[in-house]
Amino acid sequence: MHFDRDSKVLFNYWQELHGFCRGVPMKSSLNPARIKQILPYLYIIERLNDGEIYLRLAGTALDQLAGFPMTDKNLIRLVGESDRDFYAEIYRQLCSTPCGTLLERVLFLDQGDCFETQTLSVPLADTNGDVLFAAGVMAGRRLFTPGGGIAVVGQSLFKSFQYLDLGYGKPEREPELPTSNDGWPKKKAITSIAALGLDGE
Image (cartoon, rainbow, N blue to C red):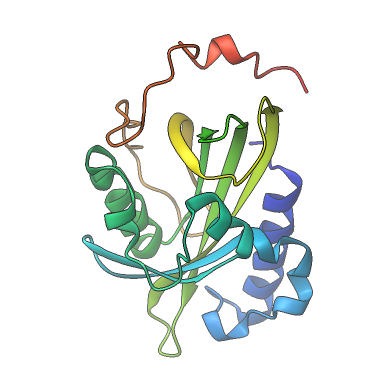
């Protein structure tokens, strides 16, 4: 398991809170000042059910990538139709186990930029101790920059996913990665993940 720098910041902070709380940290225990370096890439979701997973907070960098304010939007309605079961399952398991999730994708932006991203999510509880929330961070590494302008996601390819055992176990089976890109334009110059040379810096 390899964490990017921003993922490591959130993971270490969650572990610190976990030790102090002697259980899954409450959402109210988060202190933004302790993780200010990742705030533009931080999000907090609230899971009501499989079809209602709301972004209660989204950092400014995430809003820029989406092209609109994401706070209070339903994540399930933001992703492609073919991806909805995947996201519903991973957040159901995150809250019920509870466990962490680690997702790696490649994002192609409308103006031409390409980023390799790692998204870490960790569980949070409400004041009653029920795990209904998750905090997450999306860390990214730019692969190429042929253009400029506003950075809005145009296409996404899934690379890998894993559940993380945070002391409560993890699901035995990991979901299959989505393979289609409903709603995203096709880019003829990009044929596969391997063609991007992701092993280089």
